[in-house]
Amino acid sequence: MVEVSRDRFEALVADALDSLPPELGRQMCNIAILVEDEPPLPGLLGLYEGVPLTERGDRYSGVLPDRITIYRKSICDMSETEAQVVEQVRVTVIHEVAHHFGIDDRRLAELGWE
Image (cartoon, rainbow, N blue to C red; front, side, top):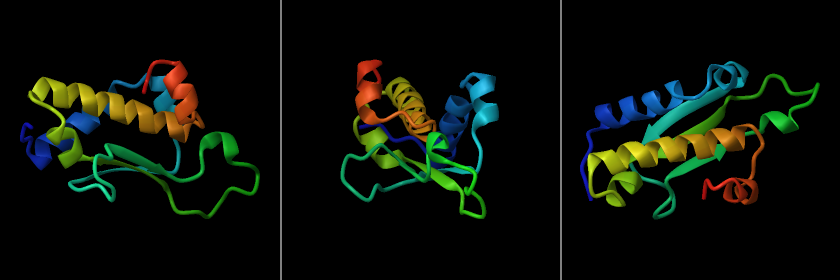
C-alpha cells in the first residue's frame, strides 16, 4: 500500500483525462468526474453511472450529468509505489471513460483493458 494525498490523486486523475485523445475529450458530454476516498464496495477502483453516449437518443435532455468516480483508497491499497498508482489511475480512468462511450466490460477485456 502507498499513500497518495487527495490533492495529488486528483491531479493524477486530471492528468489521465488530459492524456485522452482530444477528439475523445470533445465528444464527452454531460459528465462529471469525481474522486472519492472510499468505494461503496471493497476493491472497487472506479464506477461509471449514467447513460452511455451510444444509448442517448433524441429524447435525451434535462438529465443530471453522468458520473465517473475514481476511488483513491482502493487504488492506493493495491499499489506498492506511486508509479503503480499513476498507472492504475490511468487504466481506471480509461476503463470508466470507455463505459461512457458504451464499451462494456466484455469488450474491454477483449481489447486487453481488464
